[in-house]
Amino acid sequence: MGEALKLYNTLTREKQVFEPIDPENVRMYVCGPTVYDFAHIGNARPVIVFDVLYRLLRHVYGEAHVTYVRNITDVDDKINARARRDYPDLPLNEAIRNVTEKTADQFHKDIAALGVLPPTIEPRATEHIDGMVAMIQTLIDKGNAYVADGAEGKEVLFDVPSMPDYGRLSRRNLEDQQAGARIAVESHKKSPADFVLWKESAADEPGWDGAFTVNDETAVIHGRPGWHIECSVMSEQHLGETFDIHGGGLDLIFPHHENEIAQSCSAHGNHVMANVWMHNGFVQVEGRKMAKSEGNFFTIHELLETENFGGRKWPGEVLRLAMLMTHYREPIDFSVKRLEEAENIYRRWASISLGVNTSGYSLEPQHPLLDDLNTPQFISKMQGLFKEAKKGDGQAAVSFKLGLQLLGFDEIEYASQDVANFLVEDALREEIEKKLKDRLDFIREKNWAEADRIRDELASQGIQLKDSKNKETGERETTWEVKR
Picture 1 (cartoon, rainbow, N blue to C red):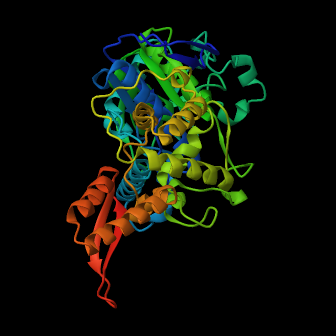
Picture 2: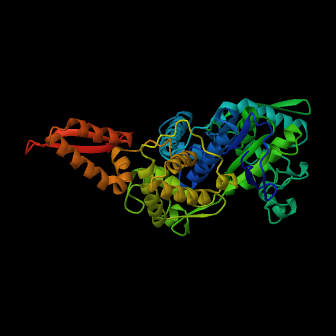
Picture 3: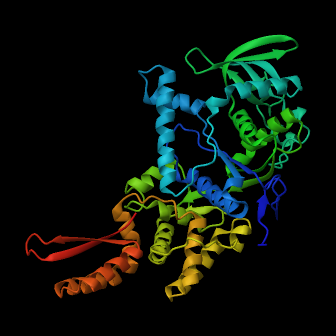
């Protein structure tokens, strides 16, 4: 039996042994993107962090025993605004579809380049409207929600004081939240902290008919859901009323996750929504908070496909490793220097992992990852295995390759053959070029057996040869590339 998995729980502010509700079905929910714009490098961090946790959970409990839900928010006022901006001549609903489909497709391409596994389930908010209306009605029936006339139409609001332990996750008390609130601006609220569950849509805004009954009178409000209710409903539908792990960025603790807890616990009569709450730290760029006004705002797509950061493109493997070199709860300073360091490490690693056969082997649970997903210590351990493998230790090479897979460096499709070659050529070029020269010498001597031996040896290391004739001299020449 390996070491127990320990995770830091934001709810309790301590690291604790992870005990799943059902080891046969470990359940995790992570807040996904709001698809109004391309995902930026800050958005990439939770996607990568919780992908590593997903891999670790599958390693510990078995692939068939982990359910990972990461949603897509495809109804939001930011989406509406972007649709109006980008497609002013189209009907709004058609424009919204264009924005959400384009953005969601790009998100999937970007994170695939980062080596991220697809979640078990990827629900969309627009597919769960009926569930949201039903949960809101339950909250009304239980006295946790009410209908009010807002400045822009009718709203259904959550009554925050109706939940006695509201603020338990963020450690904010209601008095602190009310201090300084501009009550006069939103006088339709019973309490300044109350938040929207459903709001009426204008004639040109997307909406659904939500029927809400209060005191035996039913009002149909053509509107759309608030942000928080979406995750409460999607997590319940796919994971149950209470599940194991809820993750996201540090910025979601309040108000988003706090409000999710309020809705879910009030609707179901539970004390907790998820047993463990995990949050990754912020990302800053070159020592400054990332912001378009600062000129340091970069999307994943830009880093992968343009030369806007450091004057060059960056492979997805390098971006992933750069993220994992810092513990997930600590802030990251994303810089060119950091990427260069990650790239140097990955180049060396790639030279050992090529051609290593891991079939029939399994990796023992790795202690650093079991200790609250300590990727920096795990990477340090990998460096040690790399050195031993470099000396010819076959078992170290197998453990090293398995460790790479656990970190997520097995699923990545290289963006191009040039990238695949580039990652390994510094470490292997001299050796490969020598073998190519020896092979050509054997061919000239018509020693076909030795020439084939070298070809097969390189193929076993993941190097593919291509013979051709030099157009000017007519002599045979050989080029190589990494097999993908």
